[in-house]
Length: 135
Image (tube, rainbow, N blue to C red; front, side, top):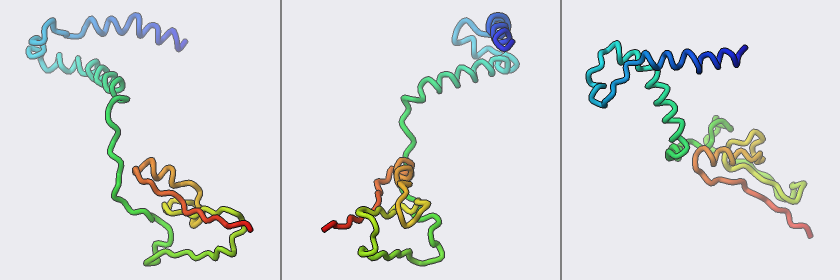
């Protein structure tokens, strides 16, 4: 049923629509089109513009990444300065990673949120990694 409808649109309705369009034979003919003729052309021109944009979009330069923004958006905002102290002697594992991008859901421990932050902003922040020497 769906394919029959699509087939009918492509085989019957689309050619009939295109035959009725006031397409001039020369470029200068576009200047002589009336307002109502332009209005009849708008859907087709809109679709062609969209298809053209989607075709060239992969080749367009990427948007500039935001570089000037607050780092800490929500962690301990009531404090004038956020400081976390952890004694190295209290480390339970050989390596511990601490967040420096302020995006971690497990702050102060890194949950690798900096990867998404770096992609969005062009930043290069990474975690602070503390390694415990094993004697």
